[in-house]
Picture 1 (cartoon, one colour):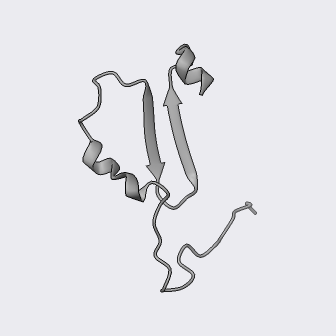
Picture 2 (cartoon, one colour):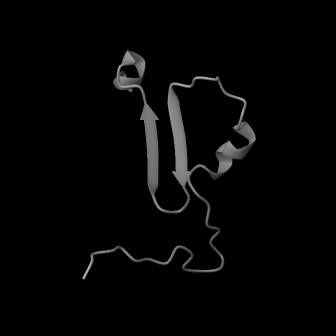
Length: 64
């Protein structure tokens, strides 16, 4: 048996389900960034996961 967290993402109809980055309009930013960005942002909606990737050798990125 595997261990999994199971919950209702929309427990009631009066609560609107939106990801934490919904208001960032990420779709409108596609192609507008630098050709060689230092940080990549990807969201898997409504899973509670956020993945940030960057160059560990970049001191500014590594410092947070």
